[in-house]
Length: 283
View 1: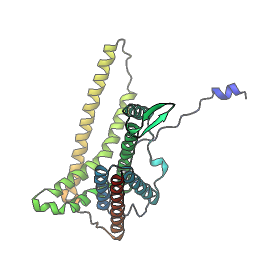
View 2: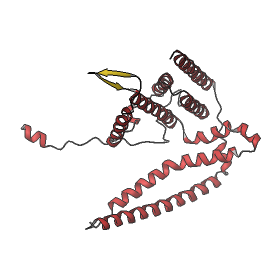
View 3: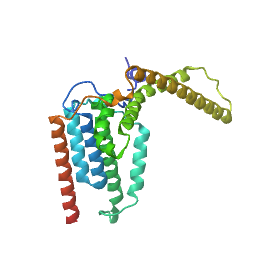
View 4: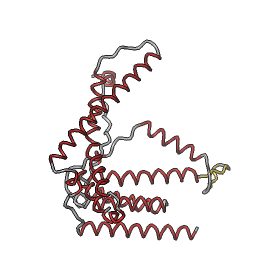
């Protein structure tokens, strides 16, 4: 076989890994067994900390916690979605435009002073966003959707003194989280069925725009119909199982591992705040 024939062979492209939301990674670990309320508290506390102290030290410590949790939970590399090429282009364009802002620190290259402040700020914001996405992904990969609603009802129990409908809010969140993956699957089936339908090739741009508009309207109408049908089925199932009260009555409470996790998070957060304060004072 010649080199020309080898190069002419079709090499199958690797399919991009899709974004999988609200589907736990199979397996058991300490992170999987944590109470859902503990994970929500950790994510909320980390978000508040990163918002108030968005420095490199805080971002690095939170990233280390996310990485350690992923290792403990044995999250496979295949769970990470593929980054599309257009997103890399947008990030590169954003980094280039941010670098044009300049600012300190300033370095000298061939007699030309170049400010790195804009580029460093862009890198910091990008890292900050990646850490927040990692926190949300860890909750999605290690938590059963059915546990989030009851955890929110338990965490919001003190708000009942103010006559805030905590249970109703928890039920609404639980239903939305349960319906989200199901509706995504339904929409994917609708889109695939729409693509399999025979199409007439339009002869002008106006005809192509009209065809795209008609397809969009048809897809929206079908999606609304499927959503209403699924909502009706879910309502019948909830009624048959005893009403919405069962959705916020999951018997789960924090254990020793949850308190240890909260203590580690508080210690890391306090260390980050202390180091950030020292760095700002020294500067």
